[in-house]
Length: 366
Image (cartoon, rainbow, N blue to C red; front, top):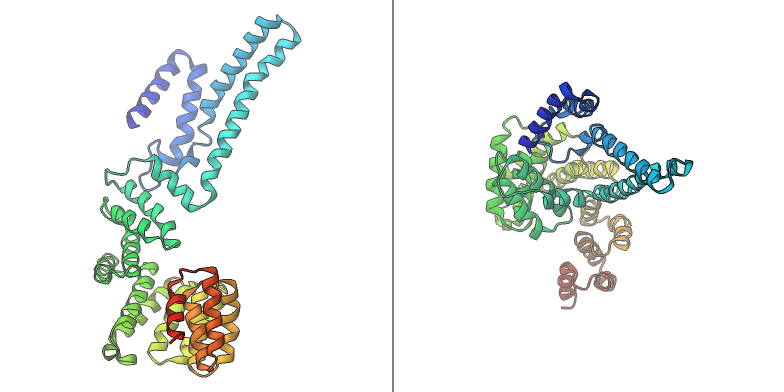
């Protein structure tokens, strides 16, 4: 593509001395394009077609003039030099406008969401050369798969992005988070340590937030005799990292949710409740924060308040496993096994393969 650009540039310069009335179109193309991208693609920006909106005029003008000329010739050949021939001059131009409009509408579909945008870039580029651009596209395409928790698609894409030239911290962090979510904890820990080593100034809030969440998960999965509560150094490490993340991005609801959970395990219940409330203030739709706060309310005997939080969420998204588990546990604390069983059955009607609901049904049937 670089050679083609150089040939077009040389042709524009040569034509300027022979037929400047046409060369100005080529000059306009390069002069409009140059300030935004120095005429060469920017490697860190895989989707940059907006740079072409104005330079495209240089290609559309000769096309329109050519079609106008063609229409005039056809009109004169068919009708002679009459007013009707003038109408024929418009016909090819109108055809181009219609075709261009349809093509534009089709292209606009790509911008509907991240999945379609990055999917288009993924399908139209050669991504086996392990270049920085290939890594950027692979990372971009992996992100929407991560958002819907489709790790079968996301993990291979992230591994390919990591193998490309100069993988960014975001690639390493997302790969670490994906490894953690699928249970590959040693690999996740190695990737987090690599990312932390690269971010010596601790300026990447996403890294610090995900790392704190990973430590908390590892703490929860460890045997009870290995948890030291408030004295556990892992909790203090996660707490410090998350506090730094919140300094960088104080309005990230998920950061405050995770910090609240850490405070809960450290025995700092008032601070935990305050952080959950703030997380919900920042994002009222944060299901994790609402469910976690309700679980603590139930644990401390405030079961009515817990139900007031959990029941509306369960009605809206009955298949959410964390909400269902906390709702069942709350009803069991109230010695209302029938209501707990009913909520599980409601989930199974909506999602018969829900793993949490099936496990809870088995426990309740004993």
